[in-house]
Length: 249
Image 1 (cartoon, rainbow, N blue to C red):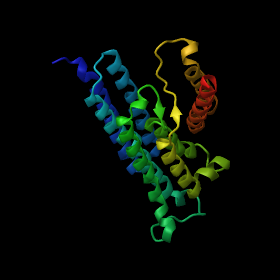
Image 2: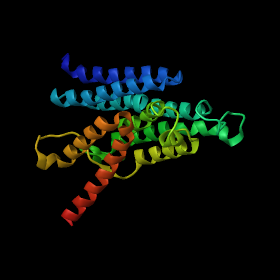
Image 3: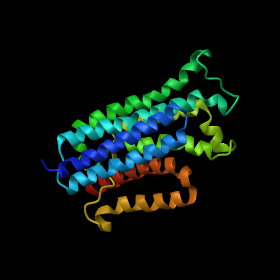
Image 4: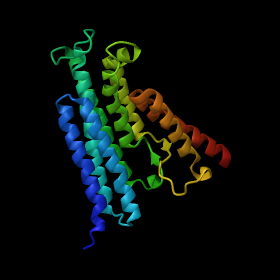
């Protein structure tokens, strides 16, 4: 039995292991470390597909394993993180009491799990959607995970004041973000892939523009740039789709 056919699956399991570690940290409200391990999982998620293509060992097992690992790292963990953000909002501000004894407000933290439900549906749909071989329909779960997991990290770097702090410590804003996340995951919006076949400007112009802008944003704004980059990715994809339709029409 060839060893090389198992290399991508082993890397996928490292993604799953990273997600499980992130989950433990998220349950213990250490969302900074949860963010780190989600990033590690996404790192492994990129390389398992890369090695599967390079070694020419792509198969149905790898596809299913990849989705199961992503469900934990990029689906369950972000949902738990959003739940923790909402459930512990009283530690940040006295304006809201989201305890379970406080009527409907006590139910708001559970809205965070809509991210997990939407991620599950998105991953199942991806596995049977032949349109997503070279691009995406809806926001990929790893991108969504980065978006959600960056929020507590940003909140931790606000110093407990300012506009960003006020926004991210408002439970209704967080609920809105959760609903937006669930929508983007399953929206019928074509999004470009970062996979490149030929390293030239003509065939990869949109990818290069995205990467250059992303690097610049990260250089200047660090963690604060992550949600902006994800939204930029969606907007750039929409513009790219409109341009392509005009060119073909």
